[in-house]
Amino acid sequence: MSNVTTLRRASTTFQNAIAQPTAADDIRDQLKILDELKRELGKRQEALREAAMTLGLARHDVSQRETAPSKAAYIKLHGLEAWEANKSIGSVRRFTWI
Image: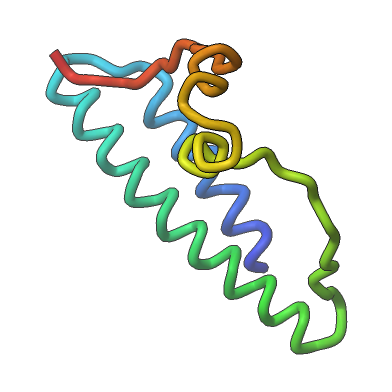
């Protein structure tokens, strides 16, 4: 069985396992396991990317990007009054256990 087949089967197994959560503790446990899996899969993904680059199959492309200054940098450049006049406030959703 190839690595790709194993990954596909594991993916299906994970999908089936989380399809019908039951009690609150079970949901918490599943989320904890999924967080651990995400970390491990991220590490594996990075290792595979490194292997692809080592074998000459891929590379990192570097490009330029414009960014806005941080709050502190903006205030330093333009002053606190300008910051207060030009800032925008948005909402952030964050998952929190109750």
